[in-house]
Amino acid sequence: MPVEALSPSQLDAYLARIGLDRPVRPDLATLDTIVRAHVQAIPFENLDVQLGHPLTTDPAAAFVKLVEARRGGWCYEHNGVLGAALAAIGCDVTRMSAGVMRQVRGDESMGSHLCLLVDCEGPHLVDAGFGSWLGAPLPLRTGEWLHDPLPVALGHTDDGLWRVSVSLGTSEMSYDFAAEPADEAQLSALCEWQATDLASVFVQNLTAQRRADSSYLMLRGKVISVVTTSGEDRREIASAQELVEILLELFLLDVPEAAGLWPAIEARHEALFGPQTAPTT
Image (tube, rainbow, N blue to C red):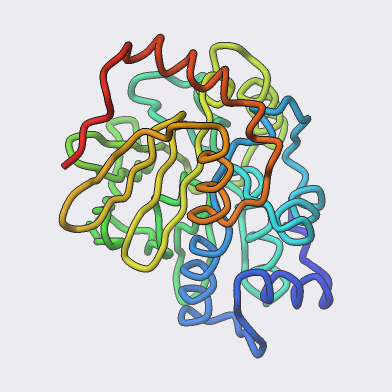
């Protein structure tokens, strides 16, 4: 299914949202500039899941939320809008279905992630919605890159799929994908499951993530992390008010109703970690 492009006025609004101006061209330099600007301007976040708001894989709805309402979102939203913007510029864009941590979760994870294949001076994996882990387009070939401050690798699985991996200290996140058009029904089903099922990590815990120059910012529950090439600094947020302030200051999210999530955030933290404080480096 062809990716529906943004209208000219929508493209202008999207470019303004990420701090860019025309002219934009379907070339690799432009693609790189757009992806880098997107992951710094628009955070990854699951506040709507936490607040019980319905979510879909519809790029038009994502445009209203991410661009017009100046919110963040998750993969279906980020890459839905980004794909439509790139199509408007003249890039050849394919939506792809992926499975996050498929090596652990199995094939039922396929559809848990939306990423993009963009043919622009060769095929590239483009992904602004994997927790802001990826900071630039990746040429579709085996290799390793530094998306400062995080190392990124692309290779193959034993059963012939592509696997992209990102390292954070001793932990690693990955997803597997085939370089072919997504099963949109599969994406929709996994979007619904991740937004509503009690077993979903997005239902269980608040998260917000963003790139800021050469730093990577991550909020999980009540723990805020700032990752640089020197290491990771972590601390615990102390109150609902501080949560709202951090969402605005670090993640550019003006969502005062997030204060109402604080009791559940504290309960989840206590269940996972007990009275221990967040470690720092």
